[in-house]
Image (tube, rainbow, N blue to C red; front, top):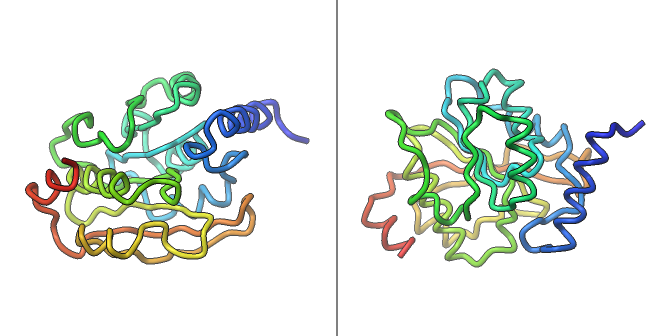
Length: 205
């Protein structure tokens, strides 16, 4: 039997997808199987953790199950309808209703930087320059050794190789799940070399 909460989440996604299919890549929330896969390397030692495009909070719940506290999470959600749901469900998390491409201007400062990031953003529907701005903001805020975890419905990494090369990043496929609609894969994005401030501002500018 489908729970009232699950039905409500699916309705949120369907309405948002109808309103803006490029911003919301799927008509349904991500599955718990995908949530476990994309968060399996993230734990309390990575606090604070950044989540991009959390939607109704499927990955957020998985992060909390992995040992992170709500207050250790920074949730970036540009959709006001989803942000409202997140504020009700995760009242002590930091929730930013902004475009992820403006991360560099809006992320709260932390002494050590974020330890990891999890992304549900539809990167395949974004122009490369916007993808570069998002990645530059994430990795400028991330401490050494941190990674971004990104899922995709496509057959390969959703970040084009020229973008990875320009930012000094590498992508490794961690696995996939057919227990999601549509089936999805997860990639770990990490630094090959540090991104300088000059590079980041050139990309964002």
